[in-house]
Every structure is written in structure tokens, then in C-alpha cells.
Length: 65
Image (cartoon, rainbow, N blue to C red; front, side):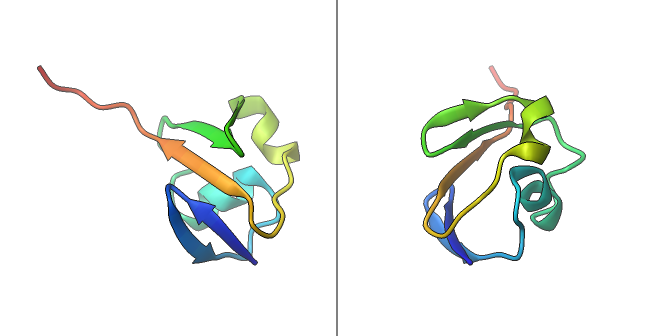
């Protein structure tokens, strides 16, 4: 299915947000996620379904000064 991830259209197999993070190799990182502009808590990712055309944002913390 085609979804938007951080502004790019990707063809993915994942059916849930947690599965998407695994597919994109983010599962071990500390990231924040949003689905269609709604923040999704870490504990809810496994039960958050994805559908064609969804927009997902994956944000990783940055360090700097």
C-alpha cells in the first residue's frame, strides 16, 4: 500500500504503525510518531492500523547546541 512517510510516498507492507517502524528499521530507536497529524503513543502503535494514503511522521530527537 502507498502511504506518506515524512513527506515521501512509500510502498509498504505494514498493516500497523508498529509494523511500519519495524519495516523502516526504526523499531529500536526513540522516536515520536504521528498519523494524519495525530500524535500516537508508543503503547498504541501496535493497534494503530494503517490504510492507503495515510500520512505518517516519524521524528527522532536531535542533539546539538
